[in-house]
Length: 340
Length: 165
Image (cartoon, rainbow over all chains, first blue to last red; front, top):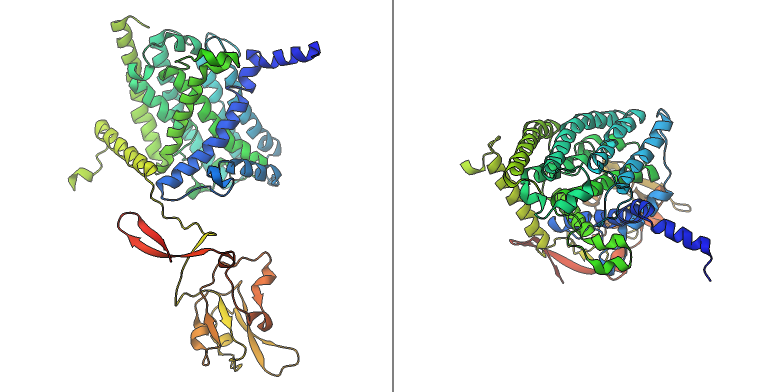
């Protein structure tokens, strides 16, 4: 005999406004992505470089739980606070950074009619929430009081203005065609994937996504061989895990948005999975987003890092004009086809 | 070649090159070539002339101290053993640079290089070998646990191949 309060609790957890941000596609799914994606990144890079990659933690499965071992190591490592650091900012910035990458999950629809908080303006909200992370990176770089973190922070400041504009304009270019800023309505309106309708906007969004998450070839901010770990030089232990995890989480959020804008979102819907939970009938969204993530981290083994000035040139001289062209392209498409 | 010169500004050409680069990456991703030696299971057979850990033979040593004099890193030192008039060499692996001068200078071949190189230490003090400790056979921990020796072969296709012996 199940007591009634317990049923209430289960119902509460399974309701969209808790389930979406905390379980799927939110925190729990994101943790799964984090653990497997970093392993896959290391494994793919190793394969391209004729190596094996992580292997000895659970050898029959090719070391897939390597990241769990790493996470345990980080948990029990001593987080060192530098004596000259601004301690409150130093500790709170990574935590806030992680929070800002988790909040968007409440507004990203995961299945038809399944979204934590359904808003008319979810696209700009999700993008602007993820745009709050770079200022926090600046805060960490200043708070750590170290020359490497400061150099990394300056690079982040330069990069931030170079990619954010193009990212927003590319997202709005495709939204212009659909005539709505709500992510769920954009997915519903998509009969032809957005990448076919506006490939320029898709390419810009993808490149800006790499820049946002500072993945190669744009990991200028962290630039391991140049400035140790950029703004994150002084972090250790669980705080380092947070700052490192935040960039992957940001990549995950933006790849979900990328799939919803350009790759048809949760279509095709699998109604059979709705019996487990209504959110799971949109599992195609997760699979597509994961493939996008795999491609994004695979680029690490293809490209070398760009210099800061080269990346800024790409940002301002290529991506920005192209994003304006993509808006014009969307408008032309809108006039010709009469909208979605 | 003129085709390889990078011309900035031409978007279509650079797009083509990006696609070629990604295709190359994917080709490597799907190939089964690997150059890694899976170390604890396999070890590279280093053969003659490898300058690994140094073995000292006490029965041959004449206590001339040439090894301690020539050592450029001051790793080799002469020790006085209790109850002995002669001094004998001991080595500190915190300092040793494996140059092999001591082995070369020894007039009676009391010092020799071994191919053992995969020793690890938990404490710095363990790296100091006094004469009593210095006069023992080196054993590679991987070989002790049954690692199979492999031979490195240069290969046109892969680069390096490792053939079991």
